[in-house]
Image (tube, rainbow, N blue to C red; front, side, top):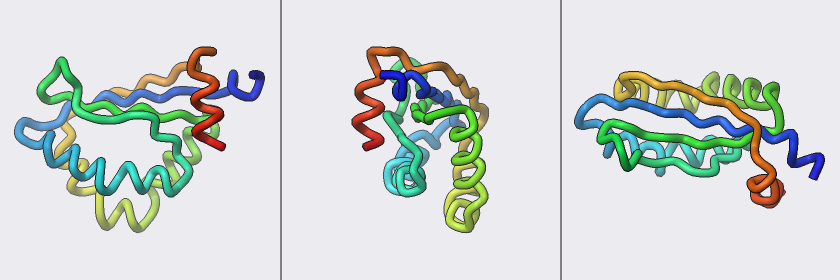
Length: 116
């Protein structure tokens, strides 16, 4: 369990511009989420918020703060991101917040299994 205790969760809360959430979700499902997973980012969940018609969330898990920063910076610096996603995704986002917090012991077995 000591290995799992080092996991951090990152929750991103996006406010997308009116009329763009469906396209934001499509790009996420078909493009950005598969790309993140290919680059070794553990995407646990994502999708439209149920309580906010302009809200969207992304839940990711990282082994440490260093891992989170390194993988995030690396993916956003790729040609794939720059050419395919940076402009359209940025144009749809009105605002976002990021919360980083330690994974609970209840989530630890799930995280270890997903990263194996």
